[in-house]
Image 1 (cartoon, rainbow, N blue to C red):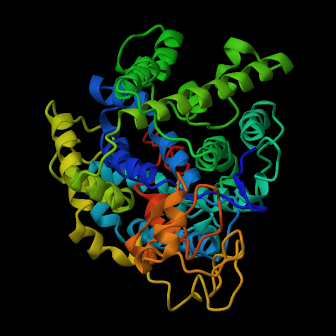
Image 2 (cartoon, rainbow, N blue to C red):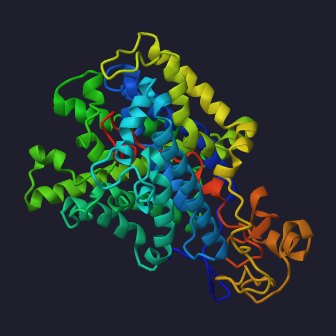
Image 3 (tube, rainbow, N blue to C red):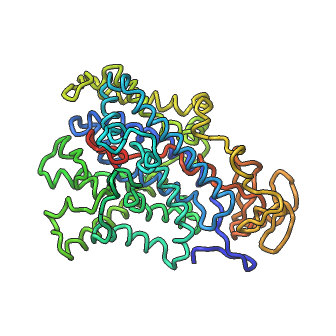
Length: 505
C-alpha cells in the first residue's frame, strides 16, 4: 500500500517541491541549533540557557535531519541515486581528511584555546599512540567518524539499505521495533574488533538506531504526506513542541531529584538521557528503575520506542511551525547550511580566542559574559558560513566536482531502473515524448497539467527541471536527490568533553 501505481508500473513517487522548500526553511533554524550543540558545550550543565537548549533539542534536531534525509532517499534507486550516494561519500571523506589534518598538524593552534582542547580530546584516538600506529594514515580512519561526521556515513548506509528494507510488507513498523529491540534485548553485543579495538569500527549500532526515522521520511514521500493546511496548523505545531521538548530534561531532573542546570542536562557520557533520546548503548542506565531481566529489557525496548514516537511528533510540530513560502535569506541559507555543519568547529575556536570559554586549561572557568558572547557569535558565524561567498570558497568540499571521476548519471542509451534514465525516456504507457517543462510540449502543459498532483522538481545543480506525476509514472530526466537536499547542515550530537565516540552520539 506504499506505492501509487499507473498503467501497470510500480515506481517511487517524487518528492513534493513544497515539502523540499519547507525542509530548506527548517534547516535555516536547525543549523543554529547544530552549531550551538558544539559552541555552547562549555556551559551545558552549568548555565540555565545552555542546559535547557541542549536537553530540549534532543527531541527535534537530529530526528528532523534524519527524516529529511529519508524523504530525499529513493526506495527504487537508479543511476542518479547511486551517484548521489557516492557524492555524499566524497563529502564525508574530504571532511574527515580536514579533521584529521587539524588534529595531527594543528595541535599548536588548538591547544591555545579552550574549545581547541576539547577538539583534541575528542580526537585523541587518532593521534595517541598505544603501539598500533594510531597516528598513521589508514583505512580505519574513515570507519571512525570524527566528532559530528557520523551522520554522513549514516546517510550512505541507510540509503543503501532502504531499497532492500522497502521490500518488507511493513517497513516502518519493523524498523521501529527492531531498532529498539536489538540493543535493549542484548541481541547485539560489543565483542571487540581485533587489535585496534572497537573504536576503529564503523558505529553500525548508532547508524541503525536512527533508521526508523529515516524510514518514516521515506513513507512520508511515498504516501505524499503534506503539512496540515489548517489555519491553526502553525499554532498546533508550536503547542506539540512546547508540550514534548521538556521530556528529556524532566526525565533526568526527576530521577536526580535536582532542579538545576546539572539536573536538567547532566552531561553524563552514555547517561540515561543520552541512551534514551540519542540511542546510545543498550539502555542499561535505567536498570535501577526497570531491572535487567527479560521483563526489564522489554520495558527498556518500549521506552526507546516511546522516545522515537515522541521525536516523530516533534518533527511534525517543527514542520508545522516552519514558514511554507520561499523566503530569500532563510531558504537560501537553509540550502547552503551543509557548509555550517562541516566547518562550525572553526567557529568554536574563534569564540574561544575571544575568551568566552575562559583560559585554555581543564580547570579554566568561563566569565559571566561568556555564554552571551558565545550565543551571539554562534549566530553570526553560522550566517557567515551559509553565505553564497562562503559556499563558493568551500565548494570543493561541500559540492565536489565528480564529472572527471564518474560516468554521467544518465548516459545515452542506458536503461535505468525506471526507464526514465535512458537516452529515450519512457513513461508508464511507453510514450517517448520528452517531458521537460522547458520544452513546452504537450506533456508539460497538457497531460501533465491534467494530473492533479503533477509536480515540478527543479534544482540548478542537477540540470533542467522535470515533471513527475503523482501517480508515480516514470517521467523523463528525473533528477536524483541533490546532495544539498539530503545533507544540508547535517548535525552531530555532543555529550560532554569526555565523549569521544563520534561527536558524543
